[in-house]
Each structure stands twice: as C-alpha cells, then as structure tokens.
Length: 407
Image (cartoon, rainbow, N blue to C red):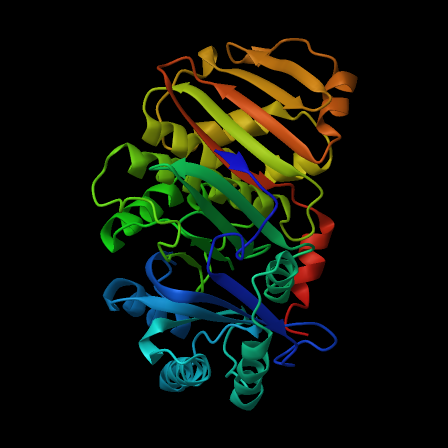
C-alpha cells in the first residue's frame, strides 16, 4: 500500500464539482458533489446522537436499503437538523433535482449537510447550486480539492487523502475527503467524511469493512466532547478496478480493509489536528493495557480531559492531569506501575516511572511539547493491549469561535 496525492477523484470513474450557492456564506464555495460514472455499492456509519439530522435519516435508508448509489450532494452552512417534516422533504427534493440532472434514480442520490442547527435550507439556492455543479463535474485533481474546500465550516484547511494497493493483480485506489473541526467526539464525530474507491466488492462486505475501520479511526478522535447531529461517513465502491469480486473474508478483503483503515486514519488525524482554535494535534497512546477495550477507554479519557488539553496548549508537562484522567476512566489498574512519556519531533522524555516523577528537566519537556504534534505514551504495564486516540489542545480561540458561531 502507498499513499498518493489525491482526493475523491483519485479512484477510476469518480468526478467532483463545487459551487458558491450562497446558502449561508458569501464570497466562498459552499456546495460540493461527488459522482460516479457507474452505479456503486455503498457502506456508511452515522451519528449515535438520538437527535439525527434529516440527511442522516435519508442516507441511512439509502445506504442500507437501496440497490445502488451514484452521487452525493453536500452543502455547508446549514445543517438541516431539527427541521421536522420539511427538512426530510428537502432531502427528497435535493435528490430529485440531482437525479434528474444526472440522469439517475432519486434513490441513488445521497445528501449531506453541515452547519447551523435549526434553520431550513434555502431550497431555491440549493437547487440552483446542483444545476450549476453538474456541468462542472470533473475527475481532475483540482476538482477534488475544490470540493473538499467547499464543505468546510470552521475548518482552517481542507482534508484529503488517497492510497493505492494491489488486489487480485489489479491496482485499487481509495480517495477521501472530510470536514470536521468542532462538535467532534468519539462515536462518530460535526464531521462529514466521504471515501471513493474503484474496488470490486459486495455491498455486505463493504459495509463490514467500513464499520470495522470506524472504531479505530473516527471513533478515536475528540475535539470538544460534543457528538454532532449530522455525523456521516460514506464509502462508495464502483468496481472499475476490475479486481476479482471480494465476496468473502479472504486475503483480498483484509488487504482492502487495511488500506481503507489507513486512509481514514489519516483523515481522522487531520480533523483532530484542526480542532477549533487549536495549535497542536494531541495523540495519546495507551500501551500494555489489560484488554483492547480498557486501552480504548483509557486513551479516550486522557484525550477528552479539558485540564490536560489546556496543559498541552501551555506546553506544560503537567503529568498529574494525565494520571488523574486515567484514574477516573473506570478501568482498574495499579497507578504505582504506570510510566508516562512525552514525544514529538523534538525528542522523547520519560516523565513518570512507576507512578512518580523521574525528576525530568522541565525545560526539556517544554521544548518537546512546543510543537504542532505532541504524543503522550501511557505504559500501564498490565498486559499487551494498546489503543491510540487523537485530539487537540484547548485554547482561548475555541471559546471565541463558538461564542458567536451563529453570527
């Protein structure tokens, strides 16, 4: 497997487009479209929030029950969440217009929205956006990037990744894009993510692969502890790589799943590192835990600790906050056996050993923490299980951004 320069147009047969529809923002693009030249099987995972936006309800039905899908229409600025019957009607109208202009069935069109909750979509503008995008559909590298930029809200940069892997003697490509910066928390996180691939695979096994990679990627990131109403992750597979169809959990399946994991891990880390107002990606590795489930719980507890996140912002090796966060995670362990390290491109330092300070240099620790990617390694010395979670530091700007988000 190798990473390549690309996004959602990297795989064969996929095109993208973007436009400025004026849904909420002015002077920037705010709609995107992904389209496959041939029908796709689709797999998806969606928010666990009881309050689910209309597009989530629409997409869950189509991904799980439609024979195939072929396009996704995405808007930024208004979430179409908490909009009642009218919001669901707008999903259908969006799919109808896109289906008509693309010459495909309404049920083959997925929709996704991100932005402010509680407002109705300006359908005249949205429909015109679809009409404007269809002639612009392109498989170019530039089209992929423009689409990724169009779906941003408070993101500071667009997020794309692509990989290639050989399956059954054929080159299979997976491309992805996402948006996500705030209202990000494990159990799907407001995030939207889309992957496109030319792999030939059954609907059932694609869904299994999608579900399996989410647990160790998107479900292991947190920015602010808020699980969105709109979280959506969809993978579309059109089969144009012409590999022997993956219809059992054989070596080809696991090769594909591993590649799908890597591309989504990269996207997930981009989202965590672009948390609203943040200055650093904060990575927590829990190693030598009793079980994988306990390692996951411990890593998430540290990554969501507001006091720890604030310490990372201040470049302060305040290890007591990390040990405290491990302690209230709900996992039994011996705190007098725990070792803790901080690591970055500037080096690695052991902060505590067997639960007490090593007498480390504060200046050296501060230097290591003064980077845009900081890792804390928590060695529980219990077993051989491990897990990694990603988050970001907590800054003054996070409050500023969210205090006037609706303005």
